[in-house]
Amino acid sequence: MNSVANLKNGDIMAETKWTSSEVDPKREYLAFTEIGERTSMRSYFSILKRARKVAQQLKTAKGTIAFVAQLSFLSKKIGMVAVFEDEKSLMEFAHAGQHAQCMKQFKAVTKFQRAKWSISGSNVPPTFEDAMSRIQTKK
Image (cartoon, rainbow, N blue to C red; front, side, top):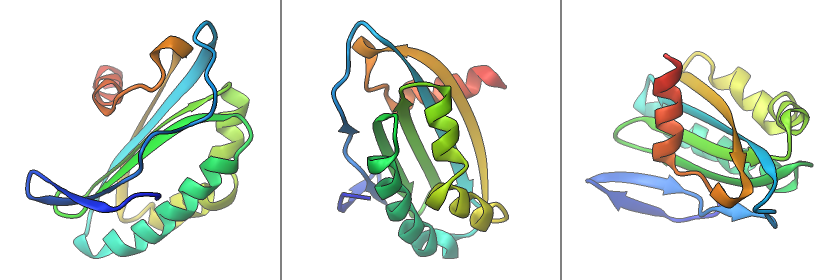
């Protein structure tokens, strides 16, 4: 993660700033969110270490347009919202490298919910609030 920890509502939160490449406002992209909750406070630092590696993977992954991530200490929440050129780019990212290793390693200590949707370049970047509403709609 390329940020400093800050305090939000009494909780320490590590978060990235939106990292983005050039976006065509007339083009359709694929937005993806993965939001989870750690089952243990102890997993924070090991997940933070891996999250930094996943952020590096996102920066270099072919087809990644934009991403943002948050990792909260007290509330145990973790979240990522990313925009990809297409489904193929998302799948290549999700099933390779640090992200794939991270998902295997933390499967037992983090429960994830996911959603994906089509997004116009003029609406990039989506907000965490929009991502949460997409997940709530899926239920």
